[in-house]
Image (cartoon, rainbow, N blue to C red; front, side):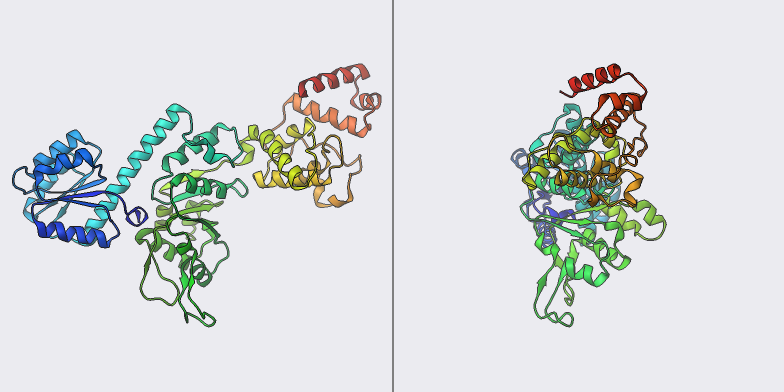
Amino acid sequence: MSDMLNPSHPIMIVDDEEAILLAIDTTLQMAGFNNIITCQDSRRVMDILSGQAIDVMLLDLNMPYIDGERLLDTVTREIPDVPIIIVTGAMDVETAVRCIKSGAFDYIVKPVEEDRLITAINRAISFQELKRENLALKQHILADTLEKPEAFRDIITNNKKMLLIFQYIESIARTSQPVLIRGETGVGKELIANTLHTLSGLKGNFIAVNVAGLDDNVFSDTLFGHVRGAFTGAERVRSGLIEQAAGGTLFMDEIGDLNHASQVKLLRLLQEGEYLPLGQDEPKQTNARIVAATNQNLAELQKAGKFRKDLNYRLRTHRIYIPPLRERLDDIPLLADHFLDEAAHSLKKKKPTPPKELFTLLKNYAFPGNIRELKSMIFDAVSRHKSGILSLEVFRFHIGPEHTSENPSCGEQNADDASPVIFSGKRLPTIKEATELVVAEAMKRADGNQSVAAKMLGISQQALSKRLKKRGQNSG
């Protein structure tokens, strides 16, 4: 599908026979390639290459002046990154194999078969893209920087794992190949897909669709559209999302839930760049890039017979795994502060000050809903906030086991039930973190009375006062 996604790949054809040049040129143009350079005189090849970068060369072996083998040696020596496909007669296969050993990428036997030609060129282009991506990724990792950090401004993080992911995204952004994004619900897969689109340089739209629960007819109509009269009620032509994403990106979320019949159609879209609107016999071509996402393990679905092996293979050319929030604990204060800003602006309130214990509490929670769940918690807390320090009660309600039986709309919980939840996640708190939570809870139950709180904790009021003062200095 790379030919349809990026038809501008420059391809050079070198052959002394004009009829063969014309035939191959026509075949490539019909396949969607529109940047073809033909050369009938082998002596001109190096001059052309000095002023024109190419992605692939098709090279005839038997030519006057400079034969193909000599030209192969020269090009591979001076421009080693260009994949060269040898075009040879049936009698020259042994020579072609020798050329492969000398650095040629592939060979095709005359008369040239269209499918074999297009397959070989697509392989060569994919190989070129992969080399460029690997080089870009290596440069990113060595530099430990981002070329376009502004493209990631909507993704709030300081996490090292995420920086590596950003570097990988920059290195693959301009590839034409499909991208599969994996991660739990709420980690921001669509944000990543949108960032990929922004960095891709594609001029078309970013179109997103959730394919979970779509039967095959709805899937086909949604993605591919229909012609007039395709079914009862189809009174006019309807373009599908794939057409709306022309020249851009089609993002399909929850791809693991796609049924088998729809998987076959998606596979054809990926392999051939073709699709059939409902009621139409002639296929249409697409130049949209496909990005898919799932919170499921496609390899496991494949083993269970629920997902096609060939589709999984096509989708996962480039793979991005977004770690869950519980593996990015250093991002919690940053995300919480961002959502406090957002919530205060949205609810037209003054931004509340979070208690220091909040981050300790949140870092010890597993967050099954990830960033989306954290955002929901904070918006809920800010919506209930009146004045002063932000209350921990809403967060305790969300996190604690008592939330299934209590009604959050009733306001503050009974002090006897509001015990701190410090063991709700897989990670145990440090002694310091646990102590902070216990002290905060004691002060809350004592309504701020240090003498009463000290008795609850079994320490002197002086020791408690000293700890509170130290905590206040640290938080300042």
